[in-house]
Length: 199
Image (cartoon, rainbow, N blue to C red; front, side, top):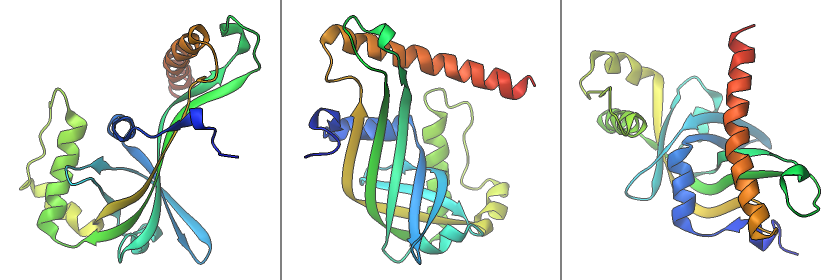
């Protein structure tokens, strides 16, 4: 039996890249002595089809992000609980989500100028579309930062899209689930932030 079910597998590479670009904060997983090391880092997908990032040199995972080591990366899109009350047909409760799982080989970027350029590119990407701030490669603060980070790039060897979006339901219920995903994500952000910052 295939898992996840075929209707929850997304194989369109362009859809997977869109998730990476829209939700660039990745979960980066390495394994050392059977112990997983996990860090959350923004990564950009460059024109060469690689993931580019940087990590604090004091992070224990930094030593594993080099030498063609294996790495697993997860990008998380929107997700929410789906109540049967939104469907026109009788259903059970479920959870819908969008995830992209990648496996790859990671290598250090040892050239400081390249690491600086990668930081500029990352900032430029994240500032889109308004670009209210531009990081210059000769920014004096970059000189201090560059000594405390390690740049890396990941060659992607395996792609897997997990898009659980009520695809096994009728068209009307699929549309209702889509609308609920949008509504619930907006509502959960507002509720969470008001609780955390208004305590």
